[in-house]
Length: 560
Image: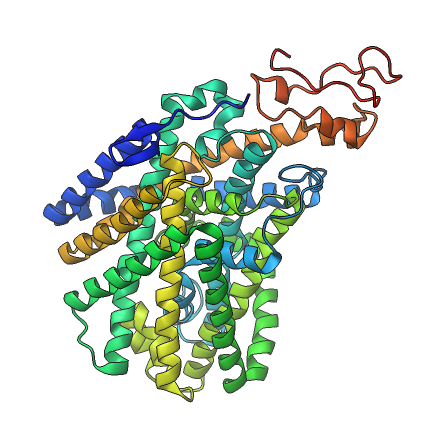
């Protein structure tokens, strides 16, 4: 029988792992007090820690992210690609469109609208190498934007998500971060070590979502001010947090199919409508031409910028941008990885890795070209104002760009709706994942617990926004996520080890079984000690007393 993480009732919550739930809640409350009451101290503490990580461990983060890319590509193209996350006859639980919409919504969130114009423009007027505001700077700006939003970040999500999906659907372990550590620590994942990594995942997920929520409402507030003249102040921002939290709470209470999937599908459809509008009313030919060139430049410069560390120049541009991005992607990887694993039952390893690595990246590259690339094109042509808007605030850049397009007010309203919906999809999926973690990896946690975490996110965002503690919160999310760089290394080792001993791999490449059905029949439903990592039980090839009536070897018992 599959062992589960110990859970039970705690106050009004019927199904929680008490150590993870209690300690996570206490840490979160403690940080709220620190960030709201001792704002400057908290900002100095966590910003200093974030800077130290970037300065002294930037090389390590570069190695981890590049290793994640290499391992992900190997998993996609190597001998394990046909292994299915579940039974070999299972169909994917979600169709390709819904699956893509949900993984994209959880993995990107508001960054699609917040940075699509601002980041390319910033790299254009403040490039690390090229001359500012030149054609070379324009090309480099798109390469760097693609680097930060390309396969490196999605490879981190891929490793975490595939590891958890494999150990849960293939081996019967809980859908929780702790399960990925099984090949290293065995049954101790059910004890303090397992609790510790899940608590860290809860902490990073909560504050990553809250930071995004807090920064995003400031962008929505700025958009409403320009569109309707609504005051851009703290009161409006807190009201916006309340509205977004209410929508997110309703979505997460409806569940994965009725709530999160439908909101994600609506979100991606609306995004495609906006993209089509920019493509039709903007410089269409330039968008297609520059997209092809941008992708080519990205591929040709990928190795250089992937390993570039400013060792010879002695500057700190990369620390402030690329290293920060790698730390931020790592800090989000527990949340996004668990969510992607949850929606990926029935997909093969190859479908999973190729889908996670390339489908969102292609969409992102075209999106950044259509928005950021067009903004740079306009600046090169002499249209003023976009750089100044970006310098005033990153969230203002996209609204300034829309001033040059027809139906400005209508499109601006659509963008504001999109920002709200992106937040809803990030918040509801984040609440769902936190509840899963605190419920011992339960894939359908109780609604009252979903309600608690969804409302908690909104309350924390409002308190810290009012106290001015979001900068400390953003730094804290990165600091909390940094230890996951080591966890990801363990995940890569454990996943490769387990896949290499999967019974279907042993049948297909080493012929340890007579048929694929026999291999599937002998696949244990859960880890029992190291048995599932050491190969199959003895089998007699010619039939006989050690085989069932259909000629297959009997399934191993827990004693084996």
